[in-house]
Image 1 (cartoon, rainbow, N blue to C red):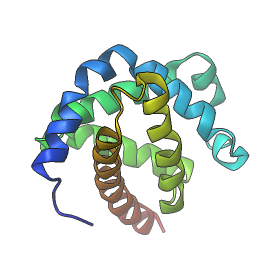
Image 2: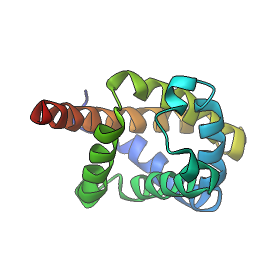
Image 3: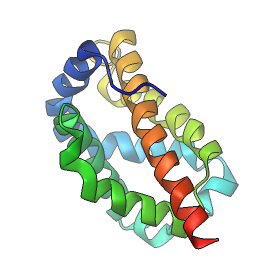
Image 4: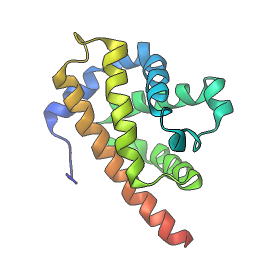
Length: 148
């Protein structure tokens, strides 16, 4: 795990903020459609929150918050703590994170198009996603150990 993101990655991710603000729910809706092709993963989610659109809206807001604060991650401490607690409650494990990335990155390209979601943009988001995933995985491991 890298201790920090490159300045280039930070700049690229921050630059996607306006597109995420406008299209975030479409991205997360497309992501969940891809992700839920895996029945095991789908079973981990509250389907009422999916059907109402609440979960896609919450995730879109979280992704936007991450993009806008990627250069000052300390601002995300509360949000990260809430995600960790929710993930532990629902049994999220490290092996789930690559599945989300495999659904999220193509959804970004699908919604924003190849002109906006270039290979460079997707690579930056892949790096940023893995960086956050590593933080969550580490904190979730501590939470699982504390509850054992």
